[in-house]
Length: 251
Image 1 (tube, rainbow, N blue to C red):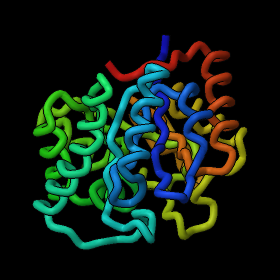
Image 2 (image 1 turned 60 degrees about the vertical axis):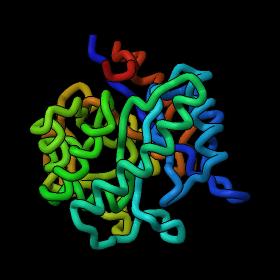
Image 3 (image 1 turned 180 degrees about the vertical axis):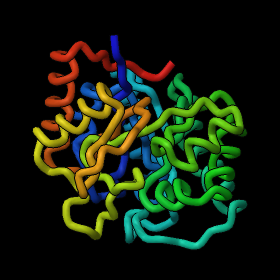
Image 4 (image 1 turned 90 degrees about the horizontal axis):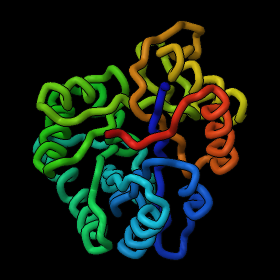
C-alpha cells in the first residue's frame, strides 16, 4: 500500500492577530510545522499548537523562517551559512522546549517561505540547514523534493523526506512558482487533489508550462493560511482513502 505524510504549516497567529483554523485542520493531517516566532507565532501560540498536535497524535515539527514578521518571512534576506545555522537551531529550540514540557518531542524541521526557497537553491545554505537539523539530535528534515536541500540532508546522514506541495504550482526546474506570479497558489480544490494524486502515484508534477517534472514525495504540504485549507485537507484525505493511499507519519 502506498503511503504519504500530510503536513501543514500552522501556529502562525501572533498576539491578537489570527491566522488559519488550526483546531479544525489538526485532526485531518499527520504532521504539523509550527511557526517559531521569527516570521509568525509567539510563545502562547507555540504552546497551544504543540498541545493540539499531541491531542490528535500529530507529529510535531518546527517551522523556522527569516526574522520578518511584517513580511511573513516571504521577503529575501542575505544571510551567511553560519547565520542560517544559528537561526535554525535557535528557533527549533523554542518548539522543542514546548514539546518536551508537554510530554512530546520535536520530530522534524521544515523551513518556511523565503528561507526554504533560498536554501533549496544554495548548496552552502542547504549544508548549514542540514547541519543544524543533524545537531538537534534525532530529528527529521523536510526538504523540497530533489533540491540541494534534500541532497544536503542525505549527504550529512539526516533522515530527509522529499516534500511536495498540493496547493502550489511548479516551474520546469522543480522549484515552486514565486508567489508574486499568477497561479502560484492552486485555489481550486479539484486541481490540488489531482496534483497530489499524480505526485504520489506517478512521481511527477505538471509544471505551469506543461512539463512532467519528476518528484520524490515523502511528505505532502498543505498551507494552513490558504483560504479553504480545511476543505482542501478533507478532500485530500477522501481522495487518498479512495485510491488506497494511507496517511502516515514518516517513520
